[in-house]
Image (cartoon, rainbow, N blue to C red; front, side, top):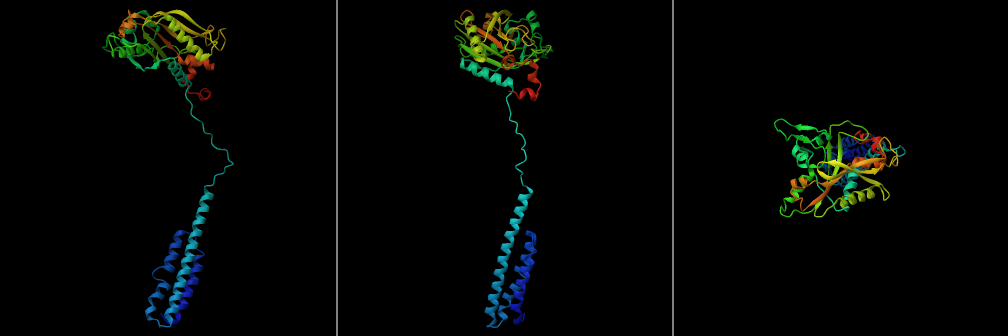
Length: 356
């Protein structure tokens, strides 16, 4: 490289580099430009490599010029790189811009099913009254679903509960069934607690919630699948008055202090005496409508635990007595919310469910 050309080539490289840089608009092109003007085979590196061949007079001039050109190109490169990044960011923001004036998508909050709400409220109320929750199985044997509850094989009261059979086969008089009521939990819970101290079983106060199944015609008040919550209290000196006080207090807590209740004599093999427990219909105020059919809505059955059932549960009926009741949470919800058809609970209709 001739000495007289070195300085001129550096100036030409600076001018051309700055001019070419103006047209660079992307990171990839910027990398190509850098290799072309600041890489290994450029006017700047050639000038530094030729320093040993230059005269003593020219070396300082060429060295200063090469450094000046290098610094100027690097500064221009940094500025252009920052400009490209800002442009890319602005383009990204513009493409992803959110128009906050547009209406947003509605966020529908989840809700508890009215049946679940009712069950939870019953758990709370019974908890305040000293009852504990005990869960029993939904698939039962005939022994627990009927026989231990004073429904011997062939007993006519079995006809009141149309039963789903899961397995009969060679099981004889003890087929496997879908439980028709939560009452099998009475015997199971009593046996469990009695086993802790067979000679002196502890007093118990339990509620047994769960799903029940019956093969029957559906209408505004009946379903083939329904929730029930069983209650049982066993101890010394328990009377029917305790049962009436418990259910009357429950009604006042659920429906208000002025609610009217009634107990009608009835029959259940596992209680003696037995009664049906009714609450005045809130829809017609006792006048009679399609839901209640006569001014009152049956909430459930109740009675004093039959001595045979106490004995089957491991409690001596000569020493212990107890009461039991079975309530329909869905019927209670119908009263509370003015629902006129129990089938709404299982239809998954959002128009119904969103009201709760």
